Length: 304
Image (cartoon, rainbow, N blue to C red; front, side):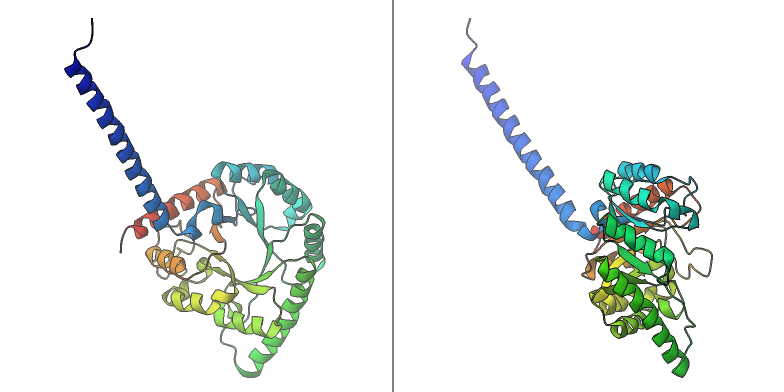
């Protein structure tokens, strides 16, 4: 017994309608997906994020293998390595473990002078053909003037130039790390870089050491942009360093919407650090910062 023609036609029309509905729905979905990806600055993509301050700053005291497993789990593919005396013996293990997991050694917290420890680090980097940025800090009285400042600059240039020349032999760049004091003022770092006069010297800028500079962040990024090698994020509260809120989860500070836009619009496209820098579990803190950054970027990307 045949199917009535009217019913057959209705079924055909229904299937055709369903097909076009699915086609249009999928098109709208992928358009929305493309728009959301376009609105999210690439600089904040997970592939560009670097875990920072998770070696001595970790309540779980992870081994190199445990640390690499944690980064795998969180889909973080870059590490900036900081250490203390107890980690020196495991330097080579750390390098080999990161290589095994396919995690980039983006940066290394480096001694302030070219001592035996610094030479050991450089020898291992050469041996295993890895080329991280070497993050070097300094100090000095920010109120220095005249002859005192001139002498200090000369001393700093000698110190840093020796490190930079050794770093060149290992095909590494040196990044001046703002850690407060005279050395933590971006304009002073630019003066040092000009005096050092070597192509492998730049700056790593840390928000958690720049609470007093947040108001002029656009100006600072414009000045240091050509020399900026890395930028480390932090939840930024107004006067946070004075009220016990120096280190906050990203997204918890009242200035976070400011910096997330300023950095995205600055033109900088280098590595972005997210940190623990507390005595808490590094895994949990990294998760909180990843989630906070995602919410912050999504929120600021959808508002004018």
